[in-house]
Length: 252
Length: 258
Image 1 (cartoon, chains in turn red, green):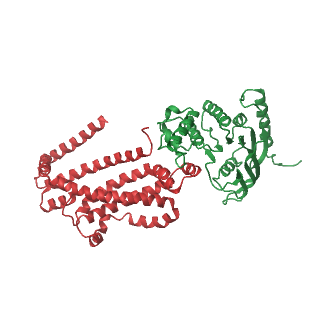
Image 2 (cartoon, each protein chain N blue to C red):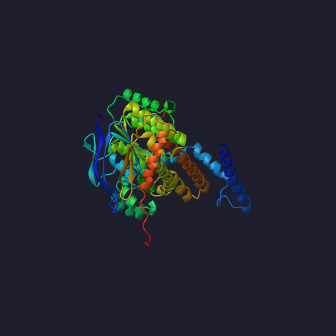
Image 3 (tube, rainbow over the protein chains, first blue to last red):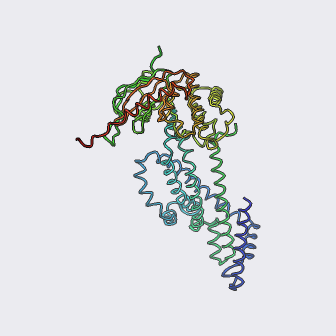
């Protein structure tokens, strides 16, 4: 654990040193590649005047709404579709065709249907998160050990209990890996989503700074997005552990 | 006179994918409180027979009656113990046993008492909060036994339940099974390919022969309950059953005539 932190520290220190060296050796002007000090100063000023947090909070709001609704809907649908192989056989080919299309490709329709503001980003995040979770859930339900189903039948579980007490907990570890994949790709598409018709958020911050040729701000936003993405993935691990604890029945 | 609990009548089983019968014309009666072992080589349909008695597989024709009622689906009256234990790995030992009682009408306190009683019976009262993955195979099977006992089924079905365990654990659990049978008057049906296990546990050993699966011979073990694996009587039954298996070989095909 401690070693992990030290390794991470060394990695980041190396990147910053190389970055600074490139500027010194290459003699690039600030306007082409801002140095670490300038970026940090900019980042700090954005923190101090509060604009960064405004953008972060609106981005997180959109992200949470899009991601959580996609994950919940995909898990619920996936649990049922995993139990209905004949229905899934019909839906699966369609999903396989839609899935490889970048959510951004839908942006003209999204703007037409949902207007501008918060919705385009939310919808794009929803699309980005939905398919990985759905596919992971269906696959997880299909792979449940037959022994568990046999035990459930033996103890005469109702359909509701079967879903809630057997299928969901048995499939959850595999659903979890789908959730991790989805949180990564959905966070990537947040920025793209906020470049369409949004007037706030981290993605907008980048577009806006680009238009003003304010590269310090662009880099400060990029670093912020990366750090939050990492934090979200770790947060998801906590949520997963919490859900798993729910059905162990420990603490007696 | 003890009454019969299971009646199997002219049972046939053929899988749709093949035209060979897995079981053909199997009829047998099992008395309440009896321990019956089904012994046979792989492919003789013994597991299929047990699954059908448990209601996990439908019969192609014939009937299985449990307490005079037709078995059409699995029920809490007959609980299956599996070689892979069938515990739920995401639940603690306590909650694995409680699982059996969750949809019963018992009060919370009664459920608690029953779970503790079941775990005490298999000697696991001190591992309530352990997860199944923290237990040895033998302990996991004991949890499965406690779970089965918790709902007080009429019959326990065992599909090679100790096959994956080492010899000493197996002996220990076999004693446990005889104890449970004696104290709870439970009927126990056991599928095994271990001849010693069959003789040690069973009141009756039913030998099945393959192609198609059928009852080949029945051996009643007339030994007192506390059996001695090294005794002469025990050896007698071993020899008897060994001989049966030699006889159950198909005679070699005649390759040529002089």
